[in-house]
Length: 129
Ligand code: THU
Image 1 (cartoon, rainbow, N blue to C red):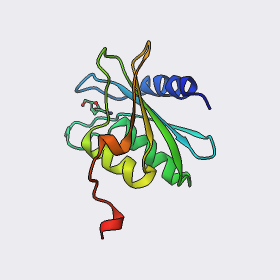
Image 2: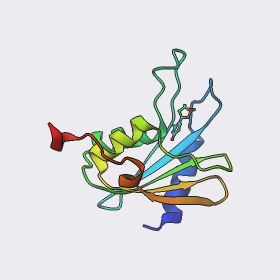
Image 3: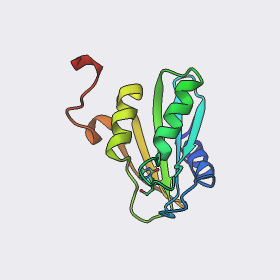
C-alpha cells in the first residue's frame, strides 16, 4: 500500500465529514497490518462537545471490524498548514495503534510525516496500570 493511496483514501473520506458548526472538514485513513484501509471523517454535533474527530472514527471503525494491528494513518484537511491529530486522538491512536507513522496532507500535497511517539511523548497507557 503506497502512502499516496492512503492519502487519497483520506481525501475521499473527508468528503463525508459532517462539520456543520466549524465547517472544518477532516478525513483520515488508517492502514491495518494486513493492508486494509479504514477511513473516517469528523462528525460534529449540536452540543459541540460530542463531536468526534476523523482519526477516532477511523480507529473505532477499524477496531469494531476486528483489526488490532496498524501501520500508518493519514490525516487530510483543506488548509495550507498541516492538521495534526488532537490530544484525544493521539491518546487513542497510541493505545490501539502504537507508534504509527502519521502522514499529514491537504487536498493537493503531503505536508509532513511524523512518528506518533514524537507527537505523544511520555504517554499514559496500559503498561502503567
Ligand atoms: N478535527 C479532526 O477531525 N481531526 C483533527 O485532527 C483536528 C480536528 C475536527 C474536529 C472538529 O470537527 C473540527 O475538526 C474542528 O476542530
